[in-house]
Image 1 (tube, helix red, strand yellow):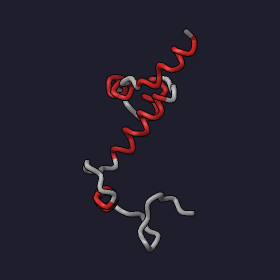
Image 2 (cartoon, rainbow, N blue to C red; image 1 turned 180 degrees about the horizontal axis):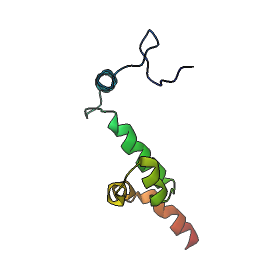
Image 3 (cartoon, rainbow, N blue to C red; image 1 turned 90 degrees about the vertical axis):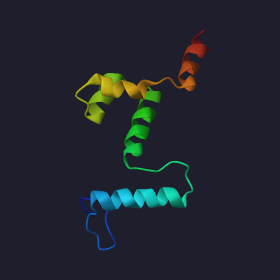
Image 4 (tube, rainbow, N blue to C red; image 1 turned 135 degrees about the vertical axis):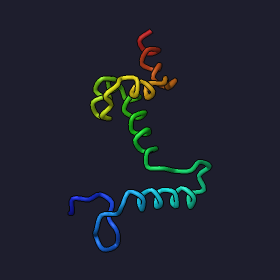
Length: 89
């Protein structure tokens, strides 16, 4: 297993632009209604972690945000997060 996650058919790392183009093509093939970009995975990961209960400061460190305001965007409430509160009441 090599040091790179995304490689070409020769096993060499692919460029950022090649990865971006591959993601766009996969989105088109999947007939998604939005244009796909790699940064969507970052946002999806942040939303997933915050909805699983990861603390905002921990997420800030994980995402590498110097300013907490960049991390707060991931804390938009998901209605499912209230289920724990409803169970207690």
